[in-house]
Image 1: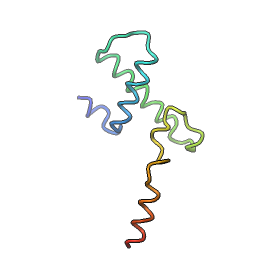
Image 2: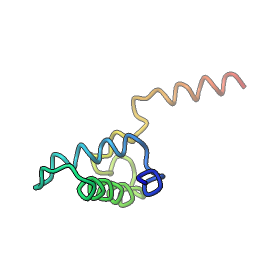
Image 3: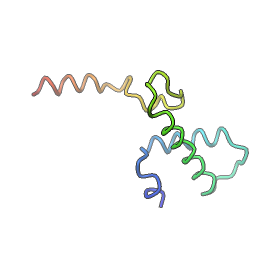
Length: 82
């Protein structure tokens, strides 16, 4: 069911929504209602920040940046192969 509702989110988005939800909640009960709310709140944060430049985005979304992943290096190596 959750895969249908949140198919556009990455696994790391779900992990981060739980991380933020557990730390910023008044209700310390893990149930479907709470974790759907956490995921929806995090998804809304992602959508709200999507049009902003990476340096102006909310710091909770820093895990979504490519900085430090080595992707630029990989892209250069792929271009060299062509």
